[in-house]
Image (cartoon, rainbow, N blue to C red; front, side):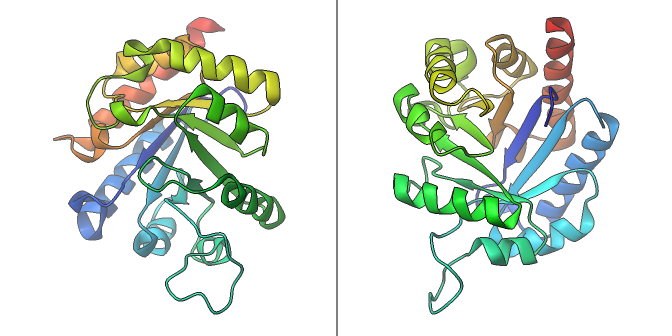
Length: 234
């Protein structure tokens, strides 16, 4: 990832996440990623049903699953495996989002398998202490998201910066190689820039993009703000 700011867009299960509307958001993300090639990275975490279609359609963004199960291929009806995500064209997965909490052993299973498969894992945590525990497992990235701020429009990077700075401090003490993203309530370019100023590697957003009248403009706003702030920080 280098020093490029990262924008992760979680499509969740919004009506705008599937079919033609979901594809439109993914293609918009691809256009923004092309504009900022080499300066920023965009990841879209799409519903499992959309991974293959989106992965085939985009060129500049990476496609993640929103969750995978801690199982190997076999008799597990309804399970989503990392192998299936990779076969569909996915680059990685979210895990332990506040809307889909899992155990620490589940995260460990997924991270270890991802390493074997050459895939990535963005693990979520709700507190600095939880972030430190997850960082010890060496996921590709880690997102700090206080659940009470998710979907509120109240950005963690500005409303509760101590959560972000506390997580950064504790994660660096455990595993300084894990980039930390800020999540929960990030809605504007200034929110995203504030996250970079605090020392994060980027932001994880959902409703800010998926409910925006113009998702492409919103993604461009977020990426542009992070790139400017990252360049200002040197």
